[in-house]
Image (cartoon, rainbow over all chains, first blue to last red; front, top):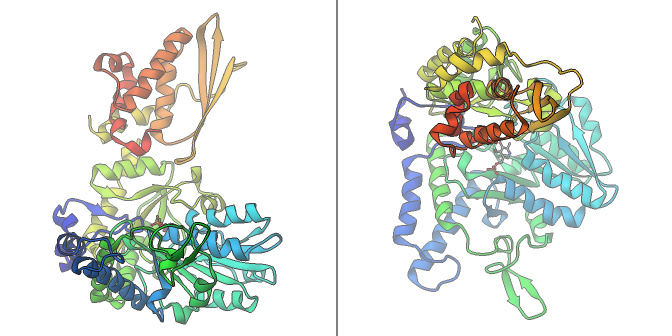
Length: 404
Length: 125
Ligand SMILES: Cc1ncc(COP(=O)(O)O)c(C=O)c1O
């Protein structure tokens, strides 16, 4: 057992095996403490008041922005827009940048393994504008075959791609995708919801135009997310939501808008959860991505090895455990994933079952009933949990009435 | 009854060896039930004569619980009047939402074993 466990109140009950980290991670105590501390000692509406508490609240919020900017290598804090989650971040881009820059006959290239969050905003935009969605197909391992890149061309205005798929875990060559897109003047929307928790992400090195992630998938609270954008793009974009906090000057007829990033943050902001995210990013940094990645690889290898010894289990994606970012999607032959997950639940094992908000991918993978089970790990999981999981998984078929 | 026991004693048998999973010849009605969130897709086929369900079956796919439910409910409704079948279906739905009385649940016979499903919100759709 490693000693991170003690930082996580959820693991006080050691009977539970939490293998649904791709859905949301657990939160270390320092995160909930930071939120509590915000409400205890600086609870005032940030960005408005001129008194001490409000100034402290503003500082907490803006410090979190600085932290997030540094965490992903953004040059300036104003390139970080706080949202509710990755989904809202992507929608923000679709409703502002997309509305302004994508029109009839244009193409939006979307990777076929995307989460619905990085499909539906583009699907809506394409339908509304008469633009076309062009699918970058993925192979069985989750990688985009070289030949697919030829679909990015003169008509492409935007490429939507997740750095790590939440189903197959396979990391995508974002830098190369950006290079290709930029050759044709297209921008790239990187969904980093699954990558930011597992690997060092540097927006400048990737040359990403937009990048989104959720706080709750990297140890932070639910309800706070990040959108990074290149400054010139953010400057050129109209506001997303309108109301308080995002204006410069308002008359009965018109308004001018606040500077970056406030232009995109209408209404009272989620400062407490931003403070929680700040603490979460500190915590992740203290663990370090060297450790997180080595643990991902070690545990995933152990898990895939253990599972491959159990008959009637099919694992999807790359055969190489290093290409999974802790995500192992599988099926038990003849058993519906919901039944598998319910049986594992009786052993206090938490795994996800269903389409994982990636129905187009499920359709192209041709999995039975469009659904799979998914075990997803994080650095705090242990070898012992993996042994216990495999032991219980081996019994599922029998529990569901098969001879064995 | 715990969940494993529910599978072992009731669900698995109906799922793996259903009595009613086949086509009905000349059905009077065919009803499709789809739950896209879990990929359940079931066609219920009923033969109704003079207000009585004289025969019925289902085809399609889904999780063991949904398949077993269909099989058990057919056990229950074949031979009943349409009204009684509607009542039983209503009791079943209320049972899995946790809203049916003990007495009502008893009238579901074997299907009463699925009462536990009410504790699985993702399954109640
Ligand atoms: C790859 C990917 N993109 C987007 C999302 C959406 O995240 P959220 O629900 O926090 O907006 C998720 C999480 O489910 C994800 O795994």
